[in-house]
Length: 380
Image 1: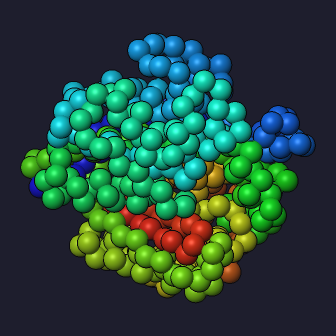
Image 2 (image 1 turned 30 degrees about the horizontal axis):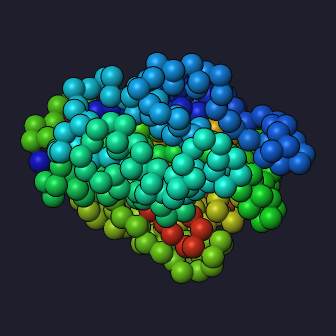
Image 3 (image 1 turned 90 degrees about the vertical axis):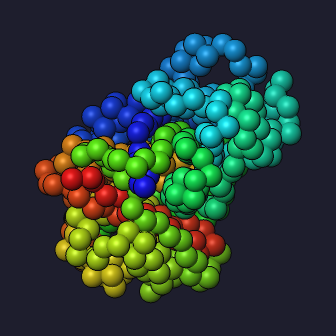
C-alpha cells in the first residue's frame, strides 16, 4: 500500500492555481511588494499578499457560505479548486480534513465585524470549514510554528497508512496581519528588501500570506509517474525559543529519520527544497544539517524569495510546488539569490535545472526548536 498525492492548489501573490504559481516560480518572479496599510502597520512594509478583489470574486462562486473571514475565504476557495480535479467525496466519513496554520483568524482580535469572535479559536475555525463541506469528522488542526505544513502532511500519511481514512485533504493557511507583522518587527528579522535565501548578503525574511491544498489517498497500485509519500519525521533541538540549533541537531535527526522511514540513503536524494527563510541563522543551520547528512552536493532551493515566508501555509504550498517539480523534472530557481554564502557551502539553484527527480527531500524549521522533514518518491 502506498500514499500518493492526487491534486493540489496554491494561492499566493503569484496566482490562484498551482499552474499560475509554477509559471512564476520558473522565472524566479517575486511577489513581495511594498504594502501601505495603517491597519496592519503604521509605515509601509514589504510583504507578499493575496489579491483581495480576485479572492472576493472567486469566493462569490461558493455562495452557500455564511459570512466568512479572509482566511476562511482563502481556505474554501483553495479546497474547492483542488477538489475539482478529483472524484473525492469530501463529505464522506472516510475523508479527513487537516488544517495547518500558525495564527488562524488572528485578525478577528482587531476587526471581528459580523463574524463570531469565537472563530479566533483554531478549533472553532476548523469546525466552520468542516460544516461548510458537510464532512462528518472532526477537522484536525496542526499548529506547530513554521513546520506546521510539513507536519500536517506527515500526519495525513500516517492516518492513511494506518487505514484510518481513504483520503486526506491537507490545507495550510496564514495571513499577513498586524499581530504577525508586529511580532516579526520586534525580532528585527524582516529584510528591507525582498528576501534573498542562502545569499551571502541575506539580511532577513519577508512575510507572505497564502493557502495551499494537497489531496492525498492510499492506493494498492500506484501508477508510473505518481508522486508518493515515502517517509517523514520531526524532531526538536530544544535550543532556544526562536533561534535554531547552531549545530543543526534537530534538522539532522529529522532528516535521518525521514530517510530511514523511506528506506533510502542520503546519496539517493536528487534535490532538496529547504526551509530557506533568508535569515542569517536559519540558512546557516540548514547548510550545517545538509553537510552533516552528507548531501552538500545535492541541488538546494527555496521558494521564499518568490512568495515570502507564509508560516503555516509554507510546508503545504512548498511541497505542492516540489511535487510538480518532480513531475516536470525541473528544479525551480531561488529568487533573490546572487552569490550563495552560508557557513557550509551549498549547491543552491539560481536558474531552472532540468533533471530526473526520483527522490526529493523537503525541510522545515520553526520557533521553539521544531524541525521536520519528508521524502517524496516518484514511481518508476
